[in-house]
Length: 152
Ligand SMILES: [Zn+2]
Ligand SMILES: [Zn+2]
Image (tube, rainbow, N blue to C red; front, top):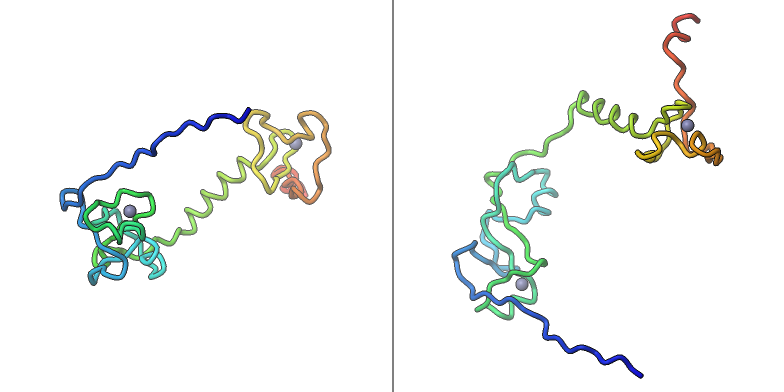
């Protein structure tokens, strides 16, 4: 017996278009000085903590000008003149990042650093946990202990 398909109207939340939230612009009719986040990134800029000032209406909505676009496909427009150059991480920041990654990728028991993050629950690699051999290409050789290097 075929399952009866429940008919349910999809709830579409329609909001009349207004300027109460943010002004909306159709694709191709965006005023000068407003760009999307992606365009900003391609220009090597970042929003700089500025909120979007307008909405780029989605394709579906360009045929329905009387309704506000509240679809996930809409875009947000930012002002170019408020954008700031993209932040480039400093060397110290990259070191800190690498230290954090090393802590997550290094087995506490055998000292091998893996190319993937280890399970936090185990706290060690699977070889130390239950003896499952790990692929030799998935880790770096353990770093020599500092004391040993000093003695040499
Ligand atoms: Zn829309
Ligand atoms: Zn291990």
